Image (cartoon, rainbow, N blue to C red):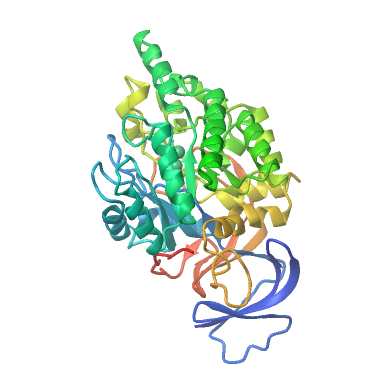
Length: 453
Ligand code: URP
Ligand code: ZN
Ligand code: ZN
């Protein structure tokens, strides 16, 4: 399939220029003005439109098992929602069962992801220490997995204690990988949760009250210290608070390899969502919880200063019925919310159009930086000859009001309900073919597992 996109304004991580783009068999083969439409199968006129590299969401949880059931998007429905919003690559997780080897869990997870409509990879999670982890991690790296996720929270299920985190970091660092980390101090949070429960404080707002910003910041501080000692690059997922940024900035200033990610919910929503009855509050139960307006502001600034490199979504929706598992006890509400479809539009509307970040920072945060950090660059995250033809033709004037009534994720609520956005994909091109045009799905691509470097 030969596709010619004419007259668009191309935005890459470091350039803005007007040009045509020609792709053949899924790859970009020419970027020049006035390319002649010779032997092409399809021409798109992108006059007045912006062209971005397809979005890369480095943090999603499709089909995540929890005691309240699987997160409500599987790889098919979740990747479909991603596509409608301009995201063409996702990185999910492999979370083994106790005793299961990382490679066996990876094999099983690949099967679950086989119906994804976009290309995908995984961060693999060691959830317990065993001596064979060294071999298992090495094997995963050989299979194209370069990032390993550890949780400081969720201590009684998948969280690791500090000495095991350190051991994992030593191995990952030695073999050239990167550790990604959920930073919240698990033991302290558990104490607060149980103290609230003892006083019969079980309604959903106690979720956020038991997970204060300070416990995230102290976990960030600890993770940075462990990574420094272990000589391992560190990527801190879903940074939600201004307090955490202080430690990240300090580490970066002294030259330590510490990357930070935030999510649209921590940029655009705040803890005022935690007032009201169960059904109003439950959709916003996520970890870390929403913070204050001053945190939103600090996070935007951190993107603009390059302190935060990526914006993932932590896409992990649950239906209201699933959230009801915790109607009597906030500790049983499944944690997480969806957002994969809205990441680009929210970043564009509330970041670029409000002057908080530039167009280039938008492209870096939504695509290029994730590709660079996670070993996908320049195949993904770039508009260049040889790169995959995963592209978004962006209509800067198209308006939308986000709602559970018109979104594509498989969930009956939307944490951005009623929020207006300006700017939306007119075309989403995957593998050189038009997957989405004007809010309609034209082609279902078969996503591929990406071996990373
Ligand atoms: O609440 C959240 N974030 N759920 C998904 C799992 C995680 O901690 O990232
Ligand atoms: Zn997390
Ligand atoms: Zn997550």
